Image (tube, rainbow, N blue to C red; front, side, top):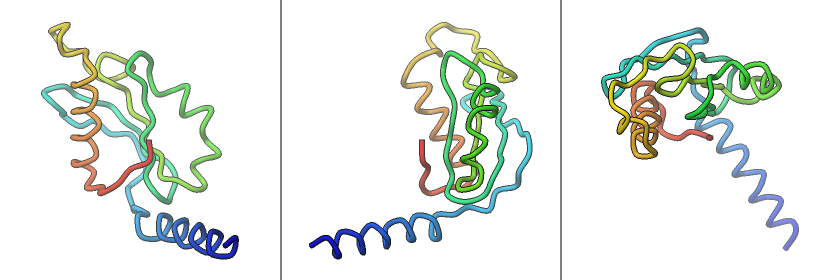
Length: 117
């Protein structure tokens, strides 16, 4: 039983790393998402992990999560109204639903099937 578990774990890890590894260009970018300019930075190589927070910018994550860049393609993004991303004009645009739209649209623009979050 233990062998089957370890073999399954190895296969899943191998599958995630090699079939979902994306080759995104590293650098700083801006995308228009849901009518708002969203700033993001790509660093590293491997499966794609999105990192952001609706109440703070991405700089703290970029500084503290650098070791993950050896195993993941990190997409650090400034949510609407934070960091270098534009702020919405209506308070209603700061919602969980809008945050989900933001993440999903950025995923689509980067042509990524699956992300770590």
